[in-house]
Image 1 (cartoon, rainbow, N blue to C red):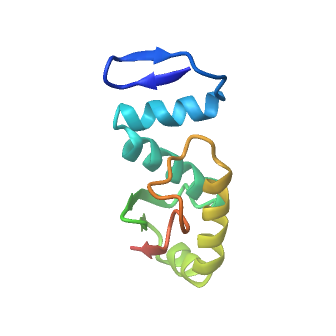
Image 2 (image 1 turned 90 degrees about the horizontal axis):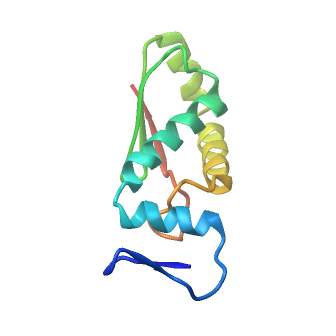
Length: 114
């Protein structure tokens, strides 16, 4: 089944995986940025383990901005920034729900710690 946005119906052509349908639904309903922010927050918490000190995380134009409440934790994360960036991109590559805006390049290019 393929979703037809013009008629708000599913057309039956060939079998399509559920992961493809979910991503297509997210794009059609224009909720990709909200879903991506939730998935990026989950990736940040899983990779860094600094969720107790993280006040806010958001993604805008492939730049991940994080507000950290502890200067000590922020300094430790700063020195690990390249490794964290690579692990978050790997996490998001394997995530079926995260919608990549363009098929090329990493999902996140830079991390800003505040």
